[in-house]
Image: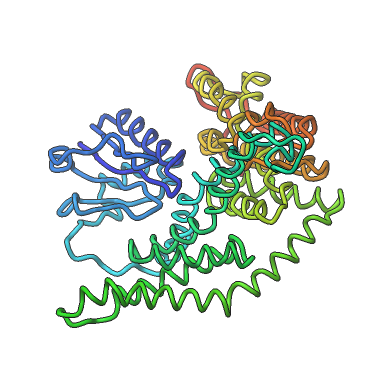
Length: 468
């Protein structure tokens, strides 16, 4: 059989490529021809028209909207990237057997309620994708500016350095300042297409300047997107007036509606909530900080790059604009721990891992140190009952120590590689201790919970009753 497909996740990083790898490897083992196009940070392994024409079935392992016009007349099975990673053989067999397979036609059906629900998440993730390059680049440039001294960017300070000032202007004054507008514009564009960009940008800029921050930007982005979508696509206009309507009326009305709603309904209430939250977070004692850290750690490790992980990390990034920098340090520590804990466990408890797993675990050192939590996913998929609780325990430990010790980070990303930059982490030693303790907890739990494997067949000696 010939199988082609597409894999794509909202962030376009780990899940996209892991789903493609699982499907391709499994299909080849089953004796089928397979080619999966990855629509990640860039589109790779692009399917040709001949390959699509010759395919017996198309598998879409996607968590966001992808173009399907190429597959008109073909049998298509759509699943999430998570299911493709978790159950590749079952997904392939179902596709070949025709289970939950649909034939793509030119007439598109209306989405059902579950698709609408998942669409909100995809809109948010699209906004996050717009925002992340600015956050990462801006945050790290700010961190580099602090290498010259905490106040080196201030022309009135004795430690002033012009290079530090430029880094601060580019990173903080420009890139970081565009974080919320990019978030809102990305959300609005995801909903309404290109016409939603202007209203979304206005909503985000007003949220950033008005004090409602990323929460206001998210709400404003939704409002801008749906208002523009209604005006651009739902209102019927006579053909002779359509071009003028789309060019002038849609942006004028959508921007005005969004702006007035932000000013009168959104900015002030959200600003009050954020001010209260900021005061509470800044006033956290060590005990409360530990409890908040435990929550951060559990959320970061629960789905390793999924919606829960993205929710707490995006929330922590948003707090940075309010001057609260401890949660993002805890997020990084918690996000680094799962791959590092697995890598350590594969060295300490070799009998609990197959040779293939031990080889794969070597990459987890680099992934973990680089704050790429998704490196732990293959191990969690293979043995979720034992691995996921171990990861959550380790990440909770790391984040709790980080928050309890009051570790703060001026960079929102970068993992361990920000450690040599002076002044970015206020307590670099405690940051390393937090990560080390979390890594050790994960490794020890994995060693205790995982069953020995048989090297002959490469599978665990666990029986079915052990899982109950």
